[in-house]
Image (cartoon, rainbow, N blue to C red):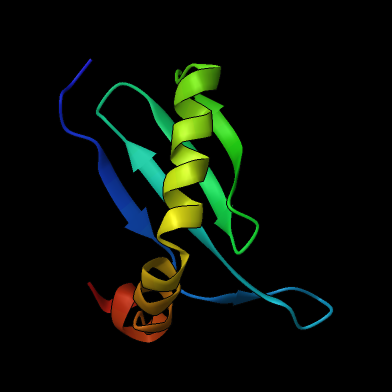
Length: 82
């Protein structure tokens, strides 16, 4: 297990009914998990314990405003050009 946990946020997506959401990915080099905001739920998990998943969900809840800002600042065309 790596001591560094990397996090990335997707651009804002829109569901068929027009609701906005984004994905938050956590990765430490061997394990990864993907959450969805604004629900702040982990929807994919590869290697994190149940307790760690709860901590990741709490992190998303506690930092929802910042995560939303990060997602809204990503422009999909800019991200595709990198």
